[in-house]
Length: 107
Image (cartoon, rainbow, N blue to C red; front, top):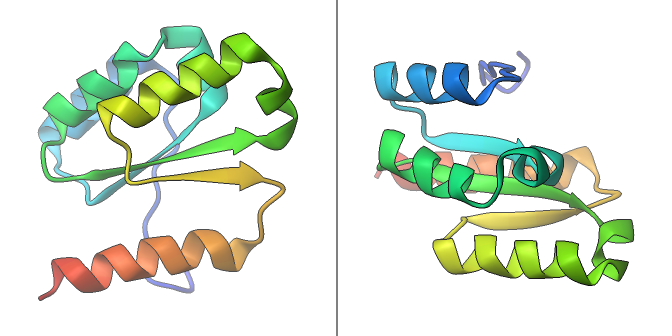
């Protein structure tokens, strides 16, 4: 990849947790749709499997009109995510968060 990041795309919770336990990743990007499917506990499970990693969640602004979805996002934020990015977002927004965190890791 141009910015020297090697992303893995995983669409299954069990596979995600297996990969995270096997390899410690600095950053985990997750879509709010996955949280809707698996529940907020997926964030806790990721934090246990990848203790030193940071979780960035992607969420669509359109979902914020749904009170149930807003409550889910509040719950996720209480559990502790590094950042929440609202769509539509620009590539530079994601890269700046990823780059900023990877620079902190190298210190």
